[in-house]
Each structure stands twice: as structure tokens, then as C-alpha cells.
Length: 86
Image 1 (cartoon, rainbow, N blue to C red):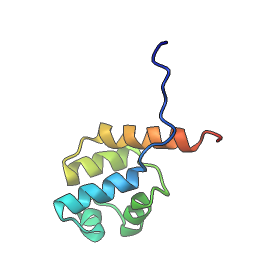
Image 2: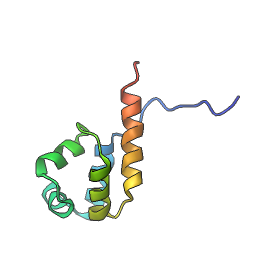
Image 3: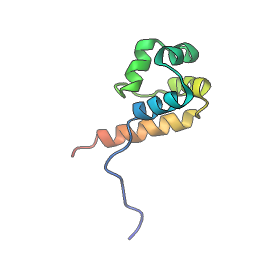
Image 4: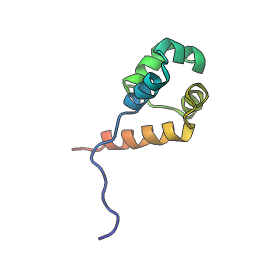
């Protein structure tokens, strides 16, 4: 049979980011300040409107303690699924 199973959906990275922030008690403005990002960019990340770049992933790692590779992989997997035709 092989390992050909591919899930049809992935969690939007913004959802995981919101959950992580909530668990740590961090508001969007606080994350922006701690990560050195504009508040508007944080809001776009929270809605998954923009991709998590390597630079942003590193800043999220510094601010949240979650490895940058996690954020990049989460975003890449999500973008791959949403870019596929139904």
C-alpha cells in the first residue's frame, strides 16, 4: 500500500499562533513588541493572510520559545494544501 496518505487540510498557522499566544498570556501588541514586528504584520499572521518567512519564524522563536522550524513547517504545509485545487 505505501505511505501515500495525505491529509486534505492543515491547521492555519495563525490559529496555532493564537493558541500559543493565549497559552502564554501574550496579546498581539505584546508579541509585536517582543518579536520586533509591526502590529499590523502580527494581525496578518494571526489570520494567516501572510506567510511566515524565515525571519519572522526566528522572531517568533525568540518571543514565544517555539522553534522557528516549527513555524516554517506549519506554514509551508498549510500553504501547500490551500494552493492545491479541490
